[in-house]
Image (cartoon, rainbow, N blue to C red; front, side, top):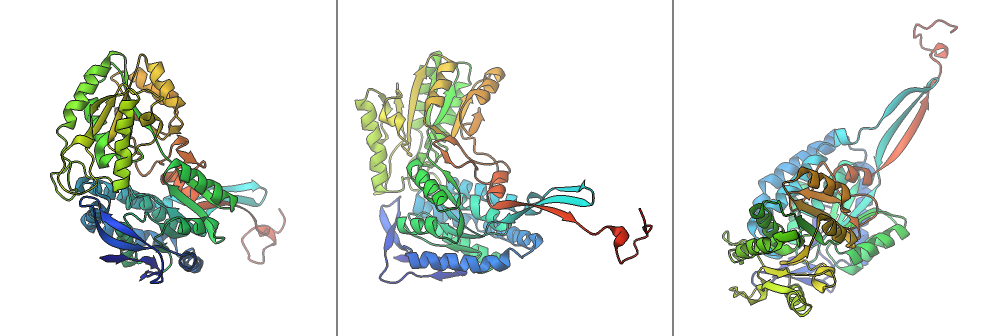
Length: 496
């Protein structure tokens, strides 16, 4: 049984042997594979103190040196991407291709941070007033922290700490306790790349560790990704304690299909977006909105594809969908199939009836039709392989449905009509919009974030807004003595 420790001062750090810990499972087998230390308040304080001490020297490191370290780190992640992916599959359960995709998207954000020399440039105005120049600079905040979810244990931290340390901050990461091995491995790669001790620390834990980070007086900012209730609490607690905060919450992502859409393209997109990574993605499509007469054809096309999805151990290269993260979560997700049926939805396919080999936390792909906004399967964030189909008469009805939903993470439309697509991007109340793209996760040089209950705070994650989040602006007004009065002969006449 592997014991998984914290990472403080560039070394593995064990909690007190009598301290609390959590179980780590392989979701494909249902077997416990590890035990992870849970940080006490004292351990959190040690990590923050380490980061605070490192900040004093790290902020003085030149931008060129920071970039050189990040370039080395990028190469090490690239060289070890398969090892990271295997760790993701072993503890999260996602198939190896999904895990490799996660690492690839994380790499994009490291590459973006390597552009810190361009990203940290300020502005300069000469002779704003007679003899006065004015310019702006961006400076780091200090110690910043990230609290990240189980569904992307490598990628989401990479949304945060590369930008944070590129800007001159030091970082404390609190990853999910359910799958801690991949983020811990990336800490070792940071050390190998040359990141000094204390610049990035990792603490494992649960609510006790989170609450201490939110209250710690030496933590200047908190980044969070998780469910909406916790995101709201993180944002309110952090800001109440005087911290800058960005807290990304839950989602109910919709995909509108208009009657003129390419049905084959739309069905393929719905299947990949709803069931990829077993639906455990905050950008997964969980509600397809069929407009007009397209409903029956679309549902048939989606349903016919579900029978072909091979569900199995994520380490098997033939598997297309792996297990859910825990048995409790699988049972919760499965309950929405029954409640949907009880509340009037048509169960086109019940993945709970699939005969899947093994003792893991598996659930097959499920499809519910004729879902209405009053049903629990639509009202709640399921976070699993259950896709709901709602039917409406018009484009206006579809957009109204999305805009009345309390979440606003992502939304997509499938159509051949350029005018309808352009109108949709204007009308829809969501932070990320796809046009014939089902999961519109922005590339690293834009920023990730939703609207409404999907985001607390006004700053999105990574990209340009990430750089602004991890820095504070300073404006300098500068006046020097009149050159005519200088003791150095600059060639000016004595009177001017």
